Structure formats: structure tokens, C-alpha cells
Amino acid sequence: MKYWLILNNQQVGPFETDQMWQVDFNALTPVWYEGLPDWVQARDVEELRAIIIQREASMMNHYNRPVSSSEPVYVQPLDEHSAGMNTESIREQPAQFQSNISPMAKAEERPSNYLVWAIIVTILCNIIMGVIAIIFASKVNTAFDRGDVVGARRNSDRAQWFIIFAIVLGVIWSPFQVALAML
Image (cartoon, rainbow, N blue to C red; front, side, top):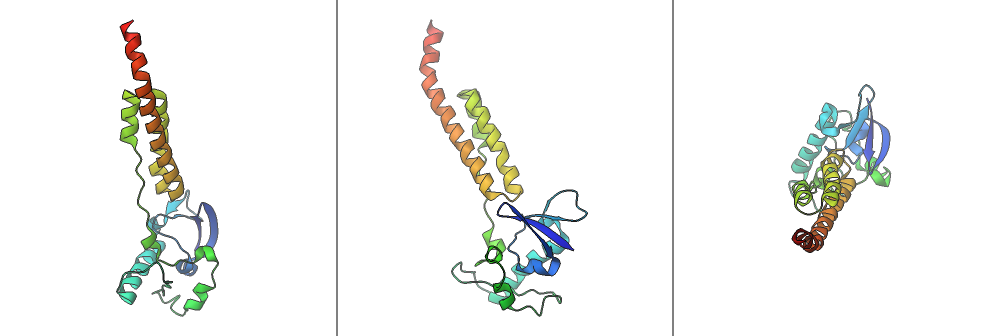
């Protein structure tokens, strides 16, 4: 089977199943193959989930120690198809597919979406800035689940800034609002 992936916000592929051992992907990487109506995460594809699990098992069994990011790691496949592969064939891969640490060790933490704060500042401080913060906050989880960690961080940062703007504008506007109420 041939797989296409989205890595670093670029579509790459096709890769045969036995080539996937050499590709730097993780469980959340978007994957597509012929017959799928839409992109799915690698963990949702049985063959790729098996590769991810075997990579981690191989790392734990072979090294039996924590992986240091300063030393190169070359995972030997466990299946009979690729058992003859050597580390030289992995080193010859293009730079974007090489990695110093295992894909699972690169797992990113989901950025905060600040949705609750965005709703609070919309109600209490500034509706316009609050609504914009809600829009960016709602995009964080979607981008992260799609494998776009950079986009998720960017949306998280923007939501946070609009929350700050809403609070500042609310504080600045409060004296004027009190003065208008007294008149």
C-alpha cells in the first residue's frame, strides 16, 4: 500500500509500507492512502500503528535506557520484510526524514486554547476582542489534531493576545462607562 503524509506542513509521498520505517512520523501525523475519503491520523491506520508500537518496543528493548537527543538513533525494524535493512540505508535518506530521537519522544504537548478565558473576557471586558479570542481559541485543538503543531501554537498565542487586549480595553473603558452612567 502507498501512503502520503503531511510532514512540516507539506504533503510527501508516496511511501510503501516497508519504507515507512525510515520516515519520521508519529501517531498524530496526517496520513492518506487510496480509498480513504479524507486524511486520518497515523494511529488510525492499523499497519502504521503497528510500526509506531514496534518502534517504541524496539527502542525500549534494544537500548533499555532513556534516549538522549544528542546521539543519533537508528531503529531496526522488527518485521520479516525489513529485517535485512541496515542502518546505512536509513542514514542515506533525505535530511527531512532523519531524526536524532524517536518519533514518539518528539510528541508535543497540546497548547492551551484559552477558551474559558476568551469567553470570560467577552462577557466582562470587551465583546469584539473577546469574540476574536474565541475564534482563535477554537482553532487550537483542530490544528493540533491535524498535526499542525506550529499552527496550534500560533492560534494559542493569538487567542492569548486578544484576551490581553480585551482586558486592557475593558480597564481603559470602565471609567468612561461609569462617567456616562452618572450622567
